[in-house]
Length: 125
Image (tube, rainbow, N blue to C red; front, side, top):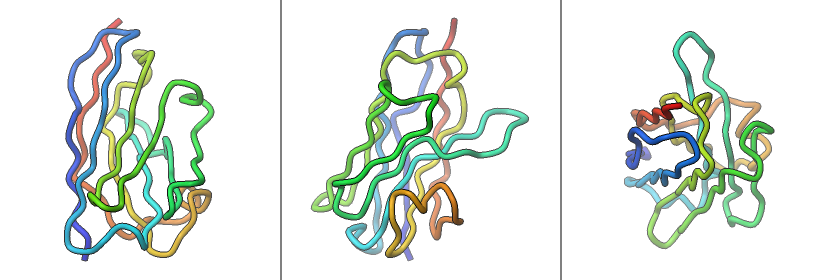
């Protein structure tokens, strides 16, 4: 079992920045591809960014490319999402996810094994 706890969400003005963190416990995340998903009210949950087990490969949704950066620290069992130039349409609950022995590309295609409880990000215009 892997427990994931997100933090760092909040209210920010458009153009601002936030950094989300995901702390994992229970098992080392080095065997897991990791990803960040988001779900806005009335919309389906969708992938934002994913990172391979080694951290070498990353993938991003088109809507966040150039603005968001995903990273991981396997030694600290943590994953982060740096969000810059935030827009009102980035408002959503953001979830951290883990998938065993998977790839960054597969994170957005197949269901993840573990999920965090989510953290709210609100961007005001």
